[in-house]
Amino acid sequence: MADVTPFWLAGERARGSSTFEVRHPYDGAVVATVAEPEADQVERAVAAAVEVAPRLSGLPAHVRASALAHVSKEIARRGDELARLITAESGKPLTWARAEVARASSTFRWGAEEARRFAGELTRLDTDPTGDGRLALTRRFPRGPVLGITPFNFPLNLVAHKVAPALAIGAPIIVKPAPRTPLSALFLGDLLAGTDLPEGSWSVLTVPNDRVGGLVADPRLPVVSFTGSGPVGWSIRDAVPRKHVVLELGGNGAVLVAPDFHAPGDLARAAGRIALFANYQAGQSCIAVQRVYADHGLYGELLGEIVTAVRALRDGDPTDPATDVGPLVDVAAAERVEQWIGEAVAAGATLVCGGTRTGASLAPTVLTGVPDAARVVREEVFGPVIVVESVDGLDEGLARINDSAFGLQAGVFTHDLGTAFRAHRELVVGGVVVGDVPSYRADQMPYGGTKGSGIGREGVRSAMTDLSEERVLVLTGLDL
Image 1 (tube, rainbow, N blue to C red):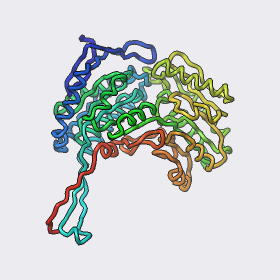
Image 2: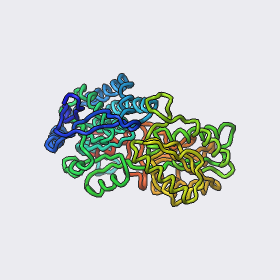
Image 3: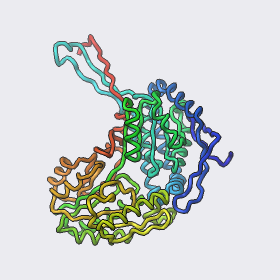
């Protein structure tokens, strides 16, 4: 079984009796054959995580920080190798795979820095007579071992966003990567194996989706952190209501181009950002641009600029550094998006450009006049599709953005500070990006959504808080 890629069980390479293939989305070629863990191996991983939890939590901060810093540096050092691996398993264009590698290195660097800063808070209690001589120290401790379930679209950095915060606070983690894209997570195991973290601190288990229910239900894993589709995420929460569940789910990224955004070059810049970030991962990002609302006075010019920018994007072989738009993750995903486009057109929408499919690849698509009930408006399309519509001023534009079951991030192109603060106040989303598309994410900032987009927040510091709980120490008899 020399050609079989092993998984990681409590920090050690392991193989089971079963395997599965990982195929390149662009041409279907076999990229790797990966070992699948057996039930007893999953049990050993969980038992090891439980056993090591007190020791890992008690490690000095500098030990955890040094481990995370090592991973950060190794990701950067082996960046080209990792980027090509991401492209091979996910079909992500090489340019964007390299960007993901850089972000993952940054995520672990932030983890190392935050591990050193995660200190606690002192509160004087002698503000009332009953508190004379008393002082409270509030610190955060891990809730317990974490089960991290990750999706296919960012096979390295979304794993980093589970692993780095957990290890930074001293919580063991079992990573369950997406079956389509397990190779980046397994590569990360190689880097973690080069640290001094104790055995059991982490495992990467390539468990198939139909077997993950046992891990979710296991009471020894009190935290489940899931990134993926809404139906799966909410089913996990429903299945374990007494666990601490973090859900980073879908989005329906909307942009508003406000009436004031018409200085020379404004619309061309907005259109370029909209076109690029609706299509940069073939639309397979929960904060990809999907809906665009432009004030009626700007609509016609903006639409023309968007179509020009979309047509300038180059799609094709993701290993070509010049490629902007690669394939979707598989043919079935591309067929679904193609069907949704067809439904919208049949209902009266205008197909301005794109809409053609070859295998798993779908040409970047712009639609207008789409009925509000169409799935390309109501649901997360997760494909290279933009719906562009005209609105009558800020009131209608903000209302149209909020008219969604999702609430992850939104973008508002405006120069007006009052409009920016109004959007921040009124938009029911986890984040508002002013002067850009909703696809912007810095890995250290709080990230998450409202409504159907999930619960909890990621971003390294925010995730560390979410994966831990407060514990108060009251000291008595002090001369303050």
